Image 1 (cartoon, rainbow, N blue to C red):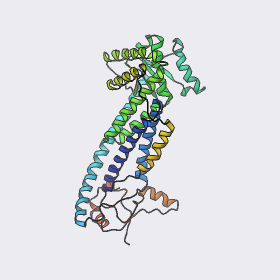
Image 2 (cartoon, rainbow, N blue to C red):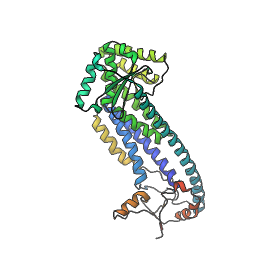
Image 3 (cartoon, rainbow, N blue to C red):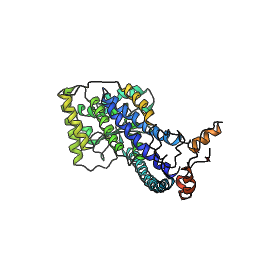
Image 4 (cartoon, helix red, strand yellow):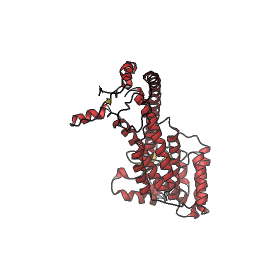
Length: 385
């Protein structure tokens, strides 16, 4: 891949990501439940990752050619600027992605190490054991799929985790709470596990690692985190009459946490984030007062997810023609070398070259100035007509 191609790839993908996130947010406003909105955001993260694979492994359409009428001298100047910008952008992106990946792996190791330091809690000793039995009973006899309850005195707020098996970790002081308060917490954390929120969080972190520079990705992370907590808050209360006590439970955990030093990595924490807690409290108050705004038009979560996937298929064709070296005489870009090579092995002959034009001569003149680190997708051949 040349530096000009990389520049075009980043710009086009950034636009695609923005459009997908905006549509996912709009569809979420039409969905009739918070749990369905969580599923929609999970699908959104999967779509964003698929857009990367499609952009890197498949050709893209060229609907318009803004560089067709530019003369060679101006084109050469623009190409030189694009090559420099592409090189700088590549190394900046690679540095940020590497750092983000290291932080992601470090936090994963932190969580794994912290879980090993926690003490196992026997739910049979507590009245709230029934909540765990309800979930574990759905997993049959497989012990690795059953929720394990842990506690730690280094923890200030409950959280859940799921890698090899699901865990709920609670601070030791919570075990002294009355049964109803503990049930609130367990219902909340069990909803995280039942609806696959650890998987959604993993996909979210993966997208954040790749698009660490994209403000819309961080905004989407905030929105999806809020929807996860909304869904779990709804699952934690059986009736609007329990909301007041649920809020008091949340306030107790916040007050305790404010006076203690946090020593634990909590990926899906019960009471972390002042801004999210304020939104959750406000929304629970509206539910208690029955002030939820009716939606003029509602769709199911399945329809919203299918709509997002179908729309994303068209969004994947949005490609900004940044690369001046792209031939204006072809409606599609060449097949990338790695997928073209695989197709050649199976007997297919994909178009893995750019049709000759006067601009492609610039490629021959300037290719020696390209860094070797991002030339793996350079045009394998040029053809004159």
